[in-house]
Length: 187
Image (cartoon, rainbow, N blue to C red; front, side):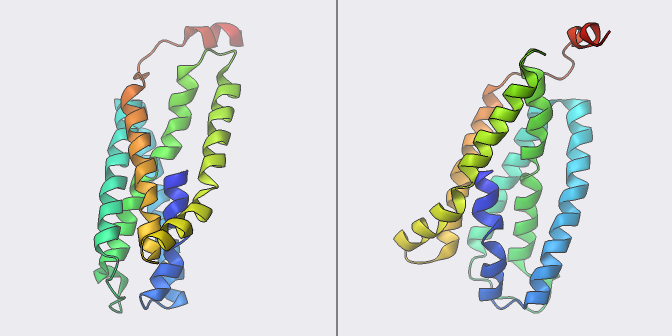
């Protein structure tokens, strides 16, 4: 959540600063939402077919690549078209990587016994949202400490993405695990 809020809250204003009109930022937002909606479905299918771990590790790697791309595109003024604007392209790559957050739900629910499942997943998500809610405060502070460039502050989300990636690598794979206890309790 911290990685997501560190960029998504600030990128529209940053795009305007680089010369994009508000209508262009609206188009970016709509295209971003469409791409992510499709990506959630693709990675959800992937998660069910090939495993939870890779369905989070691969998007997080894309997210980190996206962070890097956004950073190297930080001074790329809006050229008049979204399709040739490197910042837009890297923002989409970063966004595709952010779908990992949605994949954690299925994985977390498979890590806990039935009796704790709902409480555990809800608690983890609420802690994540709580930590993520600090991003809109932390990003400007870091930007001020690093020369006043807002994009420098946004890059703190990359650290959160690395932590998420490490956590995903440490958690056990649950795909293919037998959940017979669920069927037994339902009857």
